[in-house]
Image (cartoon, rainbow, N blue to C red; front, side, top):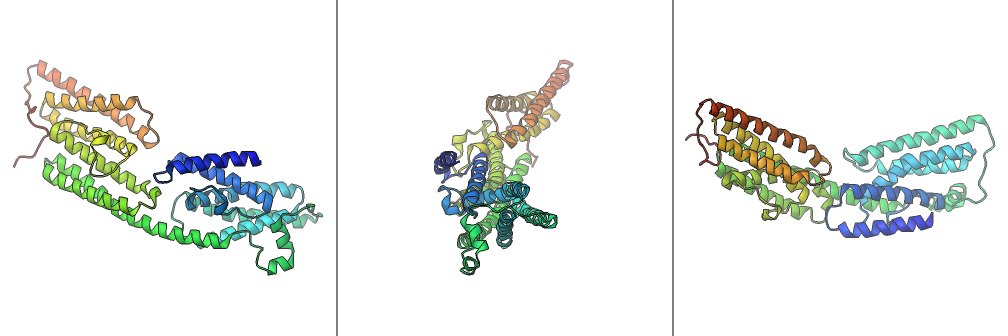
Length: 381
């Protein structure tokens, strides 16, 4: 197992080094947790203890470490317990019970929020129960247990009263976990602050879009500037915690991108490029999400043009959404972005239908209002 472990460790070290100062992709976080799970199992088989964070490659975050060792507890330990029970190895099962019991007791001190880590923590109590049930079943069968010829150090500590009295029998590195708890509490406090500020961005961005549909571009621009101010404040806050960009903040930046794209389109009829975003730093995924959502706002403007029988206005909206669709169809869109393609296609089809119906009305002699000189429908003052 050592050559494989060394290879995996080198891969994790290389990839985490590349992304340690930026947002770590979800797929990499999952793979790092998988590696930690396997490393924890190998370490346990060799020493009978839980692998400490300091034994893992640099760049592994506290959250990845917690997720990996909890997965090891919830899956590998339970399978190992069943395997040792088949061999009547009560001693090994007792070691497993001691390990998962200490993990559950220590992690109960953490304030895990709802999410993957919380769900994995909830699974530890089932691992404790599994060990207890197996030990009970082994006891009631009154079989002679099979002892291993050579016990790991942690097993000897548990069975040796002198070692237990010395206080070295713990399966966990308590001082390291205490430090992780302190960092996690600080991380959680920062996370709560970021979520609160993200609501300000989302509210301002949505109100900006509402203002644009009412024709109030001046108010909309002011709200967009509010998004930029708050967004840059958050970027400073999360400088040392880049993983906090995921979730609420990334979603709020997507809302901001949609609002600014829509404002620019109404102002001059063009769609901003990624490089045009200068006031606040957004990434490619947030930009593409904003582009997809822009098509929905353009479609709403087209409906207003359609009620005015403004064929040129509808054509302009169709050209915009069709350009977005053609540009995105050639890209691989991960996760939630791929789900936005169907509404985009439906928007294009709807605008084509509206344009077709307007052409029929015109061919029958029905007049239509030419609003080509206006960038967007506005309320009369």
